[in-house]
Amino acid sequence: MKVENKVVVVTGGASGIGAALAQRFSSEGAKAVVVADLDEEGANRVASSINGYSAVCDVANEEEIKNLVTNTVDEHGAIDLFVSNAGYVTVGGLEDDDSEMQKMFDVHVMSHLYAARHAIPHMVNQGGGWLLNTSSAAGLLTQIGSLHYSVTKHAAVALAEWIQITYGDKGIGVSVLCPQAVETNIVANSPTAHLLPTDGESVASMDGVLSAEELAAVVIESLEDERFHVLPHADVKEYVRRKGDDIDRWLAGMRRFQNRLYPAGSTPADWLLG
Image (cartoon, rainbow, N blue to C red):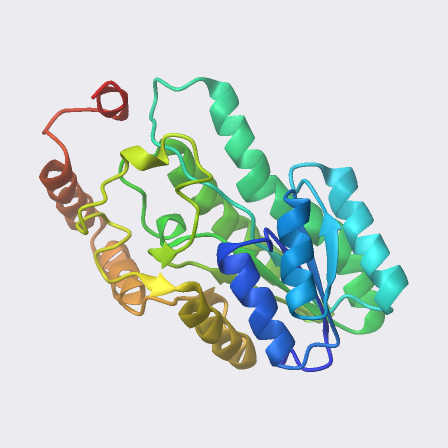
């Protein structure tokens, strides 16, 4: 899947990974790049910098996703690549209110479902298209300290797998972006995320912190190769293999790693309380 001359939509495009992807798609010769975000000012700024188009969109609201897709097709004649990218992280576990899980599920999973539901019919009619859904390495492994992030990111991967199996023979491609640590403002935009380890020994940062621009380069390469897993941190592929080979050994290893980060036996609730 080459981006050149394609119509691309990027949600969560006002900053971080989304902004870097929008900029890279533009430099690759996309016909039109629509930068969508709740942050209208940020979306306008990124769109202006690439001669693109901006849209205000709450990805957890199906009607807004539907309008984003419809308006893109009406204004640009097609929708070739939909990048469903918005997300955030929290610290918490079993003690958290269920509403927190639902809120994150809406952003990390339902947003991808809404994008697929409304973009795929247009893509099939035009002869094909591609979905790029941002998950996380946590969606293939786990996120120590964040039940909600782990569960919803796993669900995002499962949804992408289902879409690829169900619509792959109808000309629809799917890729799922699963990075570890990337230099973005996700912590600043995420409640309680400041409580995650920042000493360089966290699960996310153990294999290095990439710039958003470095990640975007891997995305372009992966799309061109039509890979399902987009893994900016190459070591994640090996971790997934080890997990699949011996899940009990992998779980024991993760418990040991958790105990290096936090006192043995503590829970996310304890961390929140300090």
